[in-house]
Image (cartoon, rainbow, N blue to C red; front, top):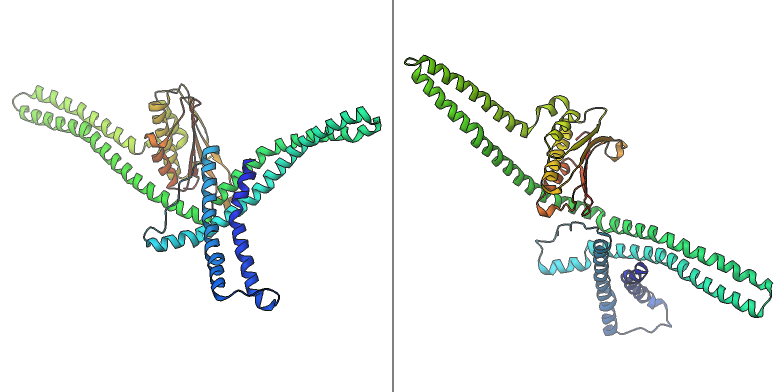
Length: 420
């Protein structure tokens, strides 16, 4: 019923344009139709202003409003939120911006989207309402007819009402069964028209590139500071202590050889600890097991360092590209870190599989899934690192999806091109 009611509103822009087109047609053919009255210049100018400017402007503004209603409905009812594309008219003058807002390409695209949505709503909503309302009304009327026949008619007259009693509920059932499918097609149509139009995809891609570029710069700076802090607090301090130990040993070589040997042994132990510190820092950059043995061997190592039980399910018949492996590995590590910090999970499953796709769809995918039974409710705005994961995956034209209903755990899925 909501779709059917809104469809009438969505159809208004097209109706206004039809009225304008009708006036243009009558005005253009008036000289060849002598029976039609010919208005003077002043009424003609007023009509031209109304039908050529005001009505098309009202049509495009109503179309933009209807598209906004569709977006709000997708958000409020179905929970589908899409990032708004950047405004390409930022540098224009206010007058030019207003003109393009009313008569620009996006405005006329909104008219097309509104009309298509209206036609779908009229068809889908009309079919469902017709089946349900007419089926219910027919059943009720047939029951009343049966009562009337039993009172005043003959048994032969019961055939028609009984048939309607059987057909009516069937129509209601068909209508109720069709309703969810009609709603699904409506949502799909909204998403295709409003979110997947070519110009919207390009603008949204530009917005994503801009945002991800800024976040990648911040992430690189944070990583640089982490490495600097680790080297300063770890390896640098140990190297300073090692240098002081060797200086003490050198000063005692001639006076106390045994003490000098002890200091050299201490320096040797310190050097091994420095090497271990440097190895830990290097492991944070790119683990050697990933380079040498691939994702199948690296994921169990990362799972073993997690503070929660992790089950690893890897089924990779061959190794993808090193870039795809590195992205999948770091996504898994960051996801496990997020789970340890925020999820309060008792069990985690990490899976990596190859998804076969035709070459025309971009080739195969490396699909990484991280599932936990924690508290759910993961939100990128709360600083859980999801934006950083998205940036890593999006950098190679992959996709990252997070399904995290509150209280029902979280499922993170990263689809990475196999030949990234």
